[in-house]
Amino acid sequence: QVKLVESGGGLVQPGGSLRLACVVSGSICSINTMGWYRQAPGTQGELVARITSDGSTRFGDSVKGRVTFSRDNARNTMYLTMSSLKPDDTAVYYCNIACDTARGPVTYWGQGTQVTVSS
Image (cartoon, rainbow, N blue to C red; front, side, top):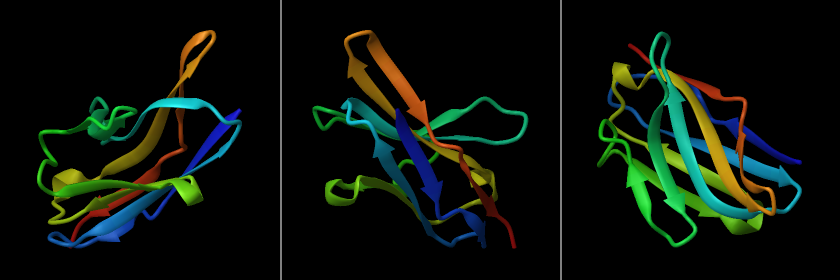
C-alpha cells in the first residue's frame, strides 16, 4: 500500500507564500503522474500542478506563474511552493500519485492540508 502525507498548510496573509510537502511511503509503485489538487468548500476540486513520468507539467489556470512543483527523490517527497497568495487560494490541498500496475492505473491521495489565506 502507498501512503501520502501532506504538511505545511496553515494561515497565511494575502501576498505571502508557503511550501507544502507530501511524503510518499509504503509499497514501491511505477509512478505515472504526481500532482497537487485543491478543494474549497462548496466547490469542485481543481488541479494545482501535475507532472507526468515524461516530465510534462501542467498548472491550473488560477495559479499559473505563482506555483512551483518540485520533488526530492532521495526523500520521496514532492513540494508545492506558492507565492502571491490570495484569499481565493484558501482550500484543502491534496497530493496525489497515479501508479501503473498490472491491474491498471491506481490513484492514491493524501489526507489533505488546510491552507487559509486571510489577513
